[in-house]
Length: 237
Image (tube, rainbow, N blue to C red):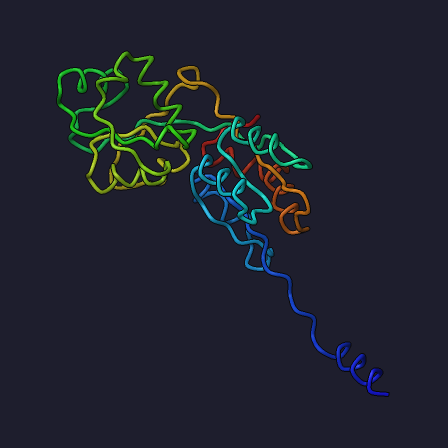
């Protein structure tokens, strides 16, 4: 009788909701991703650089879905964790941003300003773990100024843009998706994709991911998701 009573009591108690699925997203998605994630989607999103998030995942962080800014970090994670699923979802676009009055209007004037020592700080994401930083370094190398550029490094591309927005740097090479919405009178010039290795932004669905995490991955790669990404300045794979 006692066992029957306890069983009925357990059945009467409300089921405890599963914790939200943890999603790691590249910093260039800060503006485009929130509209895709409703309040009841069952996911919690944290933003950062792709390299750092992959390192955290390999160290045991309970990410169920990672939305990375390139393919190489996704490949590294997939090689270490059997059962992952990968899909490209966007092509990252780089942009030159410059403060009003800096005299920088395009890549040629940026090169001239650096060569003449007229620029004190150029902001990029840290190329050691941020794909946009590595792309920015490739652009500077192509211009022949990689060793002379007075770099200030952000932990991710969003922080690099903030250095330009708050005046800590006169210019920067950052994500076009973030630069378009920066405001503050900043000059924004898209960088031709041919000037750097392609940023094939790739998502990684981890083994055992929840229905909510998989639904977000599906939405990002759906026709609606592609439309939203394209409107924000991303290319499409």
